[in-house]
Length: 100
Image 1 (cartoon, one colour):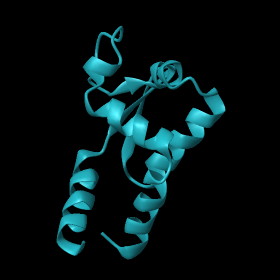
Image 2 (cartoon, helix red, strand yellow; image 1 turned 90 degrees about the horizontal axis):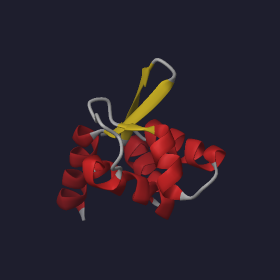
Image 3 (cartoon, one colour; image 1 turned 120 degrees about the horizontal axis):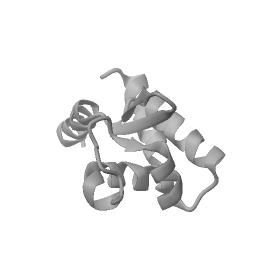
């Protein structure tokens, strides 16, 4: 992980709404009941509903998390699904354990 990538992750995690989204995506079957399949992640509409924020704000937060590499998106027809990038999250956590 480059210093710039590390900085982008730290900046992304500085927002509580983005931390909430990451937390919810950790166990989507518990946080987003009513969605029948989590193969591609969580439908963006479910994230909007749970957050209580405007669609544009949630979209901005998801884009920020995606730029930082913390989530990935998959389009299936008209729907967009988000899921955590566990490999990057683990790499980030390990880097923090080693350096701090």
